[in-house]
Length: 392
Image (cartoon, rainbow, N blue to C red; front, side, top):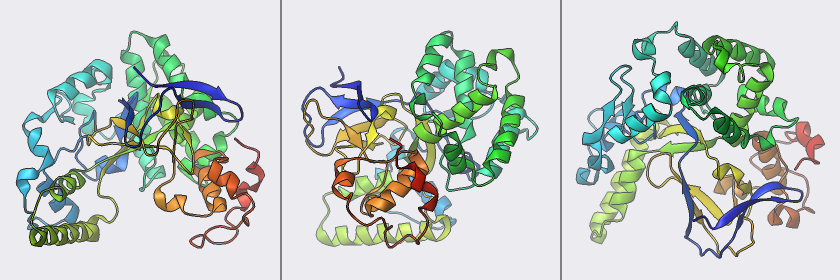
C-alpha cells in the first residue's frame, strides 16, 4: 500500500503528498520504469549493460581495465566483486545477440517489447531504418547525453506489442503535463541552436522507421514533438556502475586501520587511472520514464531523494528529512553543488533544463538577494530567460 497520493496544488499543478509520517531514511516507494534504455553513445563506446534493466555486464576487474584502457591493472578483494552473484546468469537474445543480466530480464523484455523490437541479423546493418534513426540522433546529441531516441523506439515497440493500446496511451499521456507552449525551449535544450533543422531531419528518420498505419498516432508532426517533449522533461537519468558497487562493499569491511588506509589509497589510485582515460564517463548511463517518480516536484530544500541502490533501473525514493502527513514530497532536480549556488543561478539552470521557475521555501526566502549568478558563471547568461518569470 502506498502512503502518498497525487493531488493538484494551486499554482504548482500535480504533486505527491504524504498520507502518513515518514522518518528520515524511510523508503517511500520503489518503482520500475515504464520504459528505459541505455544512452546511444554510452552503448556505442562499449559500456556493457543489460538491455532491459541496465545492470552492469562486466566483472569489476574487466570494467576497470576497460575504463583505464590498461589490461595490466590489478585489484584486491575480488571476492567482493558485485557481479559474482549473477555473472553465471548472463544471457542473450538468440536472434540479435543483445545481452541480458538474467533469463528473467530476457523474458520480461520479450513479454513487453523485444518480440517486435528485435532486429535479428539486421542489428549491425547500418542501412536499417532503426539504425539510421539512432545514428541521426547521435550526430545531433554528443556526450554528455541527456536522452536517447532509442527510448522512443522502445516506447513504440511496447505500443505495437501490447494488446491494451488504449491503456498504454493513457499511461503515456500522464507524462504530458509540462508540454504546453514550451516545446521550443525543450528542443533547444536537447538539440542545440539548429534545433528546427535537426528536428525536421530527426522527424523524417523517425517516420521512415515507423511507416505502418498502426504507428500513425505517433508520426504526425505534433505527436512526434510531444514524444520529444516527454523525453526532454520527464526522463530520469539512470547510472549503474560495478566499480562504485565494489567500492561500497569493500569500504564497509571491518579492516584494521592500516589495511583500511591502504585500501583507501588503492581506491584513489584506481579512480585516478580510470579518470585519465575515461574522464567523468565511468558509468553505464541511460534514462527512463517513471510514472510515479515523474509526479514529484522539485524543491531546493528537498525532503526526499531518488536513488538506484540495486545497480539497475529500479528507482527507490527515500525520505531524507522527516515528512509529515499532508506535506508535499519533493526531490531536487539539481545536485548538491548546484543547490549551493545563488537563487539566480539555480533559477537559470531550472529554466534551461526543466522549463519552470522554482518558488520553494529557500527561493522565497532569498527573493531579495541580488539577481546575479554564482561566481562560476559569467555575467549576462540569464538574459534569454528574464521574460520567463511568470512560468510555474
